[in-house]
Length: 297
Image (cartoon, rainbow, N blue to C red; front, side):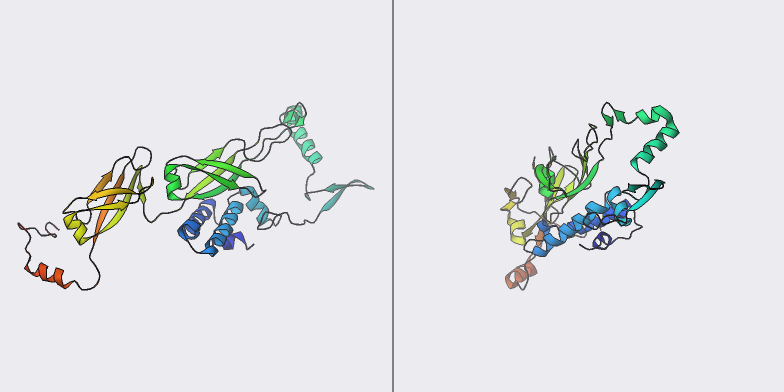
């Protein structure tokens, strides 16, 4: 696996906001849902997600920067050190620094018995599990309507994540007790899952309303038509009133997010190529009244 900083195109000195912004940009570009038929997109998206999983975790990022783990989060072989209590009595220091006994003695000296007891339970030292950070990309439709997605964790375990209806890009879900395990009976930490909403070319969001641009022909706009249009709940039929024009906005009640609506904005499209009959008609056609589209501009 390549260097996660190179994968996301960021510098080692960049802060969390810069790393998050880089990830979102790349995730939206390479998400398989917006790259149908491109198998390389799934591979690239997986590399981007793995890099972000490592760099978004402060502890993992620090350990990677120190060379303690590799780009996949695996432990690297460390140079182990020994230190001597007395001649002939060497003790092994697994971290190359203070041992557990040294730390306990230090806190006892600094804080007395109260400090020693502050993190001890009936069966010994306790330590709550730490929160774990993950990222999950969902489609626009799933984020709008709500769904449940299964998240594969680096250790092989899985989490079923419920995406509430109306989830927005960048929202962080907290799953209580699904983080790192506690020590000696202490509670587990939480799983913090940041949601990235993949863009959908058919829809964009305005609060709880959905806006869709629908192209129509000149004939459909002038004479009216019945068209099938997409919604986040599935396709529906929509009647286009005669005399509609570009910018006409039609409402589909209750087809938005939660209690919101969907608004269909019409875009009149002129057919490509020559249309001699239409051109000849327009030469002799005069609109009723004194209509001028640029009036007031």
